[in-house]
Image 1 (spheres, rainbow, N blue to C red):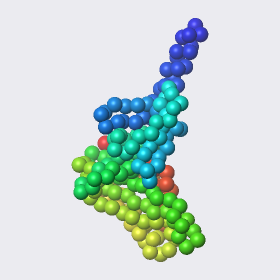
Image 2 (spheres, one colour):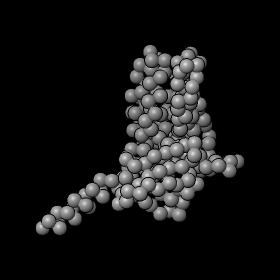
Image 3 (cartoon, rainbow, N blue to C red):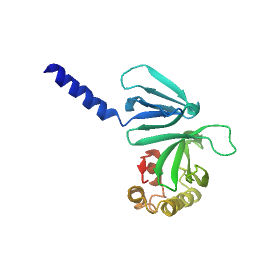
Image 4 (cartoon, helix red, strand yellow):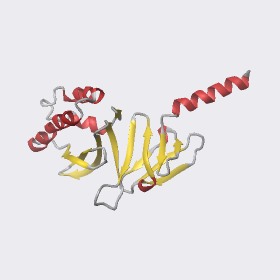
Length: 195
């Protein structure tokens, strides 16, 4: 009876964590501990631990397709006319478009911390068809650039209700806040699958 209970508990714990995994270039899938995933954008590497092992594994961006951990999806791309692999958080995917983004944080700028943001809209062939770059600086120029984000995402993802609901949450009172509320949308990139 104890063995049966133990087997059920182990199976249940595997089911709980089965939502975190790495898909390698060869198509194989490794289930990982979601709280073990780390990302080093500068070095273009990820770090993680397998579900049944405490040894940390290091992997280069060129060696995997994507990682799903919790509510996040991180994917690598080798864009046209580039020899390098880049990594981005996937915020939304439809059958036509993908919304991907990355944040570069903690750059010193006039005695404050400046974060740079970029998001791309990709077509079904993973080609960049639109790009938007902005920062967290609270000046009128950056506020104006951030205000364009809402309409751009709504244009490409008009049928993705879950994404639009999340976007609307950050759009409330955005003008009063110098359009800085949208920064949290990108700082906490939640993956939405609208395929």
